[in-house]
Length: 313
Image (tube, rainbow, N blue to C red; front, side, top):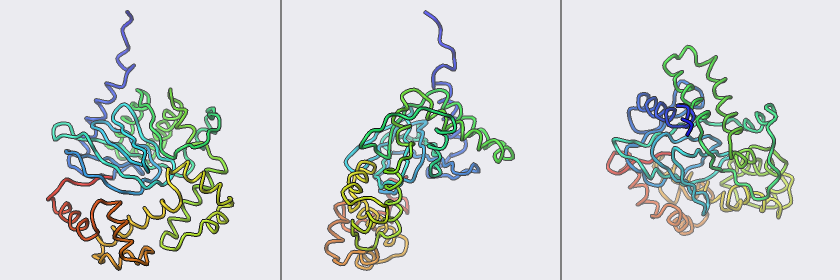
């Protein structure tokens, strides 16, 4: 039986990635780095569910395991898979596997709009056939070439003077490896720009800017040059939720932020994000976060003081 080349599998590269991250992120939390758009994340224990707006990014877990809930769809991934988000998506994330001796370690590369699609065109990578109902979130395999490029990128943290010149080149290679690897058809599909995806992206940006205003689907459809029925169908195919459900998540996340960061009471926070009925706001808040506003905010403040498990994006 032929002997495998020592670098033919992800093992050695994964071990190097774990060692690099443990050295550069010795404490739990989110850590920005000297490499633009690269964030390293560590957690020594499983975390509570965190509701957040996941912006376009590539996430590679070096150690541990995480789950992400989009609508009613659950994505669970560890070192064998990476997560790619191509549009802004309201999700619930939770680290589900982590210990002090083997902490959860995650590499996150924030993506620029259209970056994957532009690289596909330039590299002349074949685009998969059109498919209706493609989510803006996908899991893909993590092979040795992708891990090797990620390791080389993080090694630049040891030579900061090299980062401005070499980091863009290695990031470009990471994205190429992501799109050119085996079983990457779904990742290529979410990278391909088309008029429907562009319209959904514009609708997402509109909702982010006008989340507190009453939603008129006809007005939103006109703004993105789609019919109301086509907008509803394609928006849900990308985000796993309707425009109204998407707006509701934005409103509730912002209300939570206002109560936590600016000490607003529930009535004022609900009114600030567009709720006219305090009872409706409290009811929908509890449904999303699992507790009434006052109790939820008290719990979050206790976590900030270190009295409960931490939250991580």
